[in-house]
Image (tube, rainbow, N blue to C red; front, side):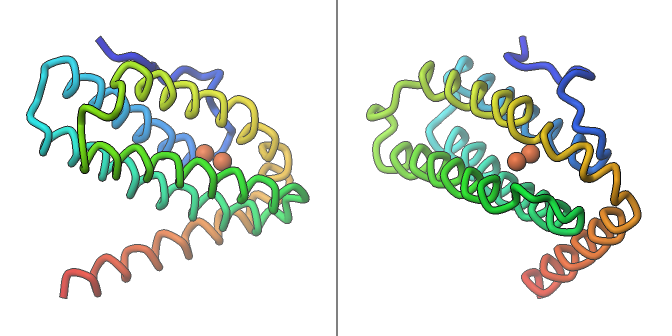
Length: 157
Ligand SMILES: [Fe+2]
Ligand SMILES: [Fe+2]
């Protein structure tokens, strides 16, 4: 049973960001599954690492798009991303060192609240700005996607 569902009221009106949010929700549900079915530490750690990587990727995209939209609250929003990413990294690192040092229920509750509160409370605030600069936002999104693909290719080679 997934612990979070994506519903229309989580939509921020920009398709690629909604898609990212769905991926993050999927990862938190996967983590919940791995913990509940008592998967080995390595598996749980892998899911946490994937979540951390995707969180960074998503925040970078969102920041590029907020910049393109000339979002006036960009700085504060980007700072919140920094804090959230550090919290997820901390959970991952602590789990890696000693799985017994973290309370799984608390971690899942934190991640669930983190995601929904951030999307509903913060991400939604940029929606009208993205809407008013739709073309610039789309261009920035294409550039971001292109750039991260070429990064992935050079990392593979
Ligand atoms: Fe955000
Ligand atoms: Fe977001």
